[in-house]
Amino acid sequence: MAKQSFNIHNKSDKPDNIVINQNIIIEKCLDIERQLPGFMKDFSIYLKNGVAVSTRLAYLSDVLFFCKYLVNETNLTEAENVTDISADDFNKITAKTINRFIGDYCSRYTLQNNDSIKIMENNNRALGRKKSSLSVLFKFLYRDEIIQNNITDGFNPIRLPKPQPDAIKKLEIDEVAIMIDAVTSGEYFTEGEKKYWQKTKLRDKAILILFVTYGLRLSELQSLNVSSFNFNRGEFRIYRKRNKEVAMPINKTSENVIKDYVQNERPNDNILDDDHKDALFLSLQNKRMTTRAIRNLVKKYTSIALGTSRENGYSPHKLRATAATSLIQQGFSIYDVQNLLDHDNVTTTQLYAAHKKNVKREIIKNFEWIDD
Image 1 (tube, rainbow, N blue to C red):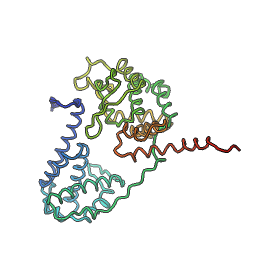
Image 2 (cartoon, rainbow, N blue to C red):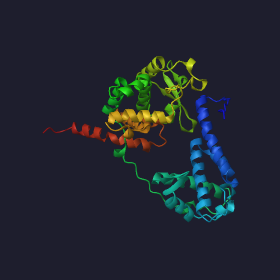
Image 3 (cartoon, rainbow, N blue to C red):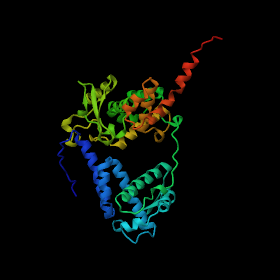
Image 4 (cartoon, rainbow, N blue to C red):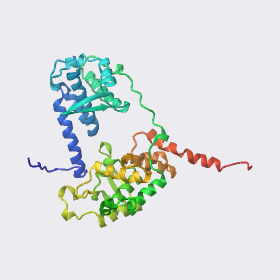
């Protein structure tokens, strides 16, 4: 079957690629909604109007998974299909049902796929998200009088490990220097690897510089366009969670690496498909790089800096942590760093600030009132 094409009628300020990515997520949401019981229609509307599309997809996926559990693993419903589950069936559900589902079933289960069996193990963070999804669902159903009791108060607590500042994985300043040297010189690569490096070294360098300078999220970097940059104004625009459009100031280093890549390595627009003409970072197939390709690129270069295997290289999120700690070590306020990185809560930023303890130690060490 030929690939179906579609046109975008975009009257928003968002670039077409952002609209397309959001539409893909929305289509996944709609597909799940069609599989859910009819009495959950208003819950779907509530999510549509109340949360980001990515959160909506996560909640709906968890709810569908729970409904399949009811059909296949319990006697709380006689329905053979999820769509046939009734509101009366949900009224039979108690907090104990949810606690067993999350604490027993979800912690380890298997998925049958053709001739193979996949074992799924979930940690407390993953279990916590499922609990959160079901809490939102049951509170909504109680609020709308679809079920008679609010059972969420009986859900077992899930203890999440407290984030430890010393456990934050990031690159040190000297390791960032090694990483940038690796992408600039190519000396750490085999002869076979250098053939690809020669074709992408300017692109790779620009990607790494943007990550360690701005602490961008992977999705934010992947969706960048050539038109995102306005060098006359000294800024570029990104789209963050919850559709927030943000203008980011661009420093000289970032401007230089972007211009170098666009002018000297990025393919000319006349050989690109219309869907990829504005995409900033392109693959060797002249298409917008995928998040997976960018993640693998980052793991490759960070593994060189760390002196480890490619599998043990750092993810883009670790470069986000690198940017945060480096900025704080340079003396910037945690509130300024919070704003730059778009942290919802300053306590997240404070975890990176804890790395300044060595700076404090050096200050006190060199600030003596009485000489020996």
